[in-house]
Image 1 (cartoon, each protein chain N blue to C red):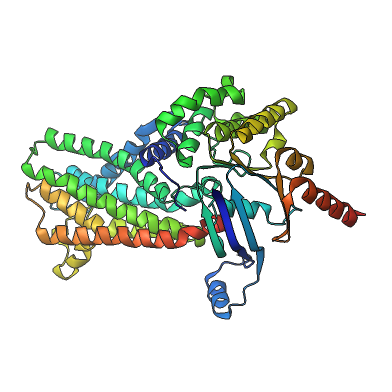
Image 2 (cartoon, rainbow over the protein chains, first blue to last red; image 1 turned 180 degrees about the vertical axis):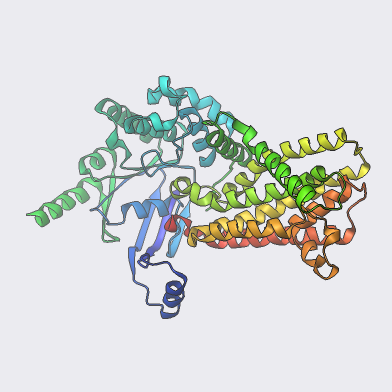
Length: 244
Length: 255
């Protein structure tokens, strides 16, 4: 079954953010001469159940834009996005968390927004706190957390909510070695259950160890899509060729 | 953008309790702040309109309070509703869910304050000898319509506020004008007849007028008033939902 499908997807952003005065707005509407750029263009991507896909590419290649469109947070300018199943997306460190709420309150808020009922959350809350390893701080406001603690909590919530697709954007980088190892184990287990993983990282090694398939984005287009080892080999060759 | 099987009550509960916790956690007076404002306003306005510009109105403080409670609810809910999408930018940019629940949860959070004030208002009315009458049954209908109207306004203006950040200042100014254009410190009967339509079409003024008829005169609000109130309230809700639906696709790009 296809869980995420992008057909000829493009995303255009306008660069007219310098002045927002009424006169400027009206003028730019009439001239239609707004400066724009395509963060993504002609992207076709199909992710089936059970696949593990890593997205690699330089800064500004469109990786994060692609993820936010794939999970439905942002709408494409052109093309079609189809998405099935329950998604848990960690698009940013502490995303969807509020600094003034305690860890426990944030778990409830986040899970509710992701589509879980109270009963489902109550059943999972102890394992979530346990895995994150922050039991002493769970009733403290999130603003007192270190970035590592926030990453632990975020990952723990996402993985314990038992999604069909787990979407991760560079969030593991913050945790310490011990926690990263725990995450990797948990992700492998998740994969063994036949679940789907969509993962963005600058680190080619992490992608290679976690994903069977890799997609290389370059300036908003898919440069290469195929088995992780091959794509990454080509990608690292390309990167070192440029930097030399 | 339709997440499956969302428990909307659980979402609303969490969003509303989030707003309450954030607002009151670090305040020593807590929820009493929401009662302080009407008390101060009633005191000041009673001084002005019984000592400086005496009004021919009996039991002026109660008369005022009946006007202030629905008015305060509207202005607060509209203003905080307008800011709600921007205030929750972190959620909107990173989590997928029906965005409509944000302004609606903010309005419902204000409803909690409003109901506390309504209970106090009704208690004062009983205390000062305005007995219970069967027309009180109209109150839930009237207040329900006001809530529907505020939801529409909050949806529309929260969406506009994402694109045009000036929206919140427009709302602030409109609320200042509204204080004078709603019969709070005067009675709608003092308004020249040719202007009364303006009041009947303004749901906040209509709600205040209907409340005074019910609570002070013990009469039912006239059908012509209820008809307009219903039409404008549901019209605002429909317009707000439509506008919000059109604009929400671009929220993540503008935040």
